Image (cartoon, rainbow over all chains, first blue to last red; front, side):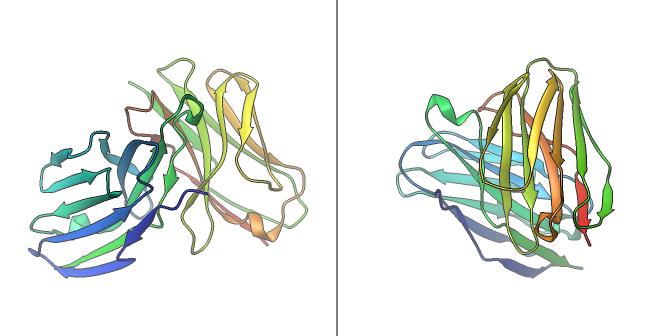
Length: 115
Length: 112
């Protein structure tokens, strides 16, 4: 059973604060790490797909880093806005042809940004 | 562009009743398709995936089944629902492992 852990479970910040959260995953047989944003009453939306150790990806105020050797990824949000409030999910894909893109998700970090 | 449709959006069903949730994808062919469930207080769990017509793999033993009668159609079923089947069900497709999933809008199932 693959273990993908996210921390913290929830986070409350003020508008304008920068924040970050962590995803831990198995460091062996790594293929890819995904980040998704899941807003209430919507479906999850892909933010990043990260495949290489040392990867850094950025989309607007959101960025992510990847360390496959130690098995963690960080997601950063700079200058949080109320519209960033959502659950942020990370998900892990194993290497190997039989994985067929199956994702193992973490429990998510619930971010609430207060105006 | 590719789109994914999932219905119904919400469903309240009595224990012991049957279930059928449908997912269809447009704008692509031979997609890999997935059914996930989020039960109360838990993360998204993979239930079934399919790499082609008639090809279904089950990830966890459960009261549910899946079928893929057409290339772009994926159906989740149950003959008799249990209370523990309540949850939020998401259909997803992926072009290949280098891309993120595209999820359907989800079905909130409450078994009473």
